[in-house]
Length: 203
Image 1: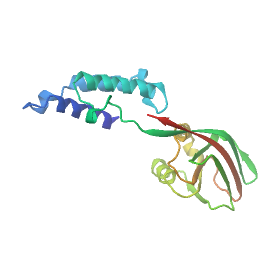
Image 2 (image 1 turned 90 degrees about the vertical axis):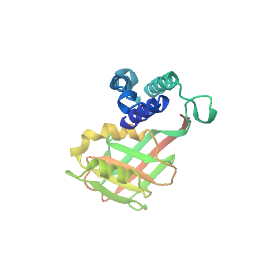
Image 3 (image 1 turned 60 degrees about the vertical axis):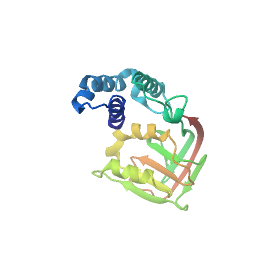
Image 4 (image 1 turned 45 degrees about the vertical axis):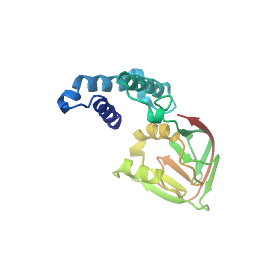
C-alpha cells in the first residue's frame, strides 16, 4: 500500500514539475483522498483474483488520466499485463503418525497438479515453534525449492486463515511442494496426497 501511494505521489510530481517547490506540488489533501479511496471497504481489500483489485485498478486509471499521464511507450492503456496462476485444491488427504489431519489445518504450495509425499520421499521436515518469528520462517519455507513438510505450533493458528488465502496464488513454476500443517508437533511417518488445479489468468 505504501509503495502504491508513493508511486501515485511521484506521478503527481512529474505531471506538474515546473519550478515549483515540493510543498506546492504535493498536496496532503490529494494523498489523503487517494489513500482513503484505496483503503475503503469498496475496494474489498484489493486482493488478487477479486472484484476489489479491478475496482482499485479502475480508480488508479482515472487518476492517471486526470493528471494527463501518458501511457508507456504509446500503449493503448495504463495496464502492464502479466499472468498469474490461481491454485484451487480439489482434494486433500493427510495422515500423520497414523492419524488423519483435517483439511482445514493444511495449506499446500505447489505448481504441480498432484502432490504425493511420504516419509520415504525426498522431503525435509521443518518446524515453526512457539515463540519463533512466524513471518520470517513462513517466507523462508514458502520460497524453498525443496519439498518441505512444515509443522506449525498451534500458537500460530490465528495465522492459518491468511496462509490459506495466500495458498490460492500458486507457487512459482517448479517441481517441489511446501506443505504447512498447523497443530502438529512431530511427524514420524506420514502420507500426503493433494490434488491441485492451476488456472492461468491475465492481469
